[in-house]
Length: 192
Image (cartoon, rainbow, N blue to C red; front, side, top):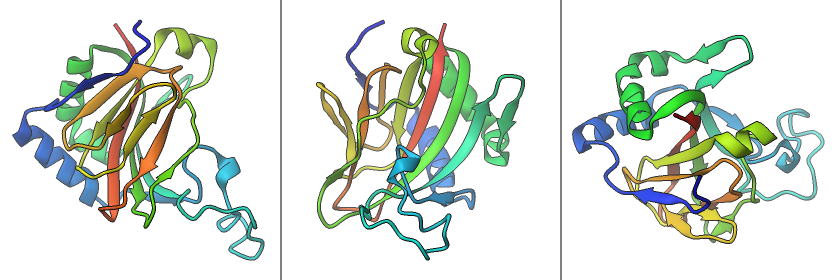
């Protein structure tokens, strides 16, 4: 398995991508989190209802997310959005040659006045995932944010661009300064 990210522009046919991306960004399926990569980034605003806020807070470290698909040990969680657009998810799975899908998640981060980079992380942890799995990030709209890979390239958010990398490759989100929202579809999977 290659250790460098692969970048593919125009990943899906535009008419398929544009309908899927628009629906993904505009459906009422998002929930908010007061962290992005790790619950340790939380400022306590949700658990304590704002009554015991952390003094070490970075206001950029929050996001909205929608879990479209999650595989558990003995079951699978599917959202209504996943079911409605399953034919597009199937097309994505075919293009990525997916054997087993673990997570399909929409993330939305909010624009900042100054460029901000989150912490380096992996989405899935464990020896099996490190050896056998990949992450793919499909950018749903263009802006100057993106993904920074540790010891690797910065991949700018460009509508219908996908970046594919081994799961064990550390990466970090980079917040945009020229758009209010940055939307990505994170795909964690095992290839055939």
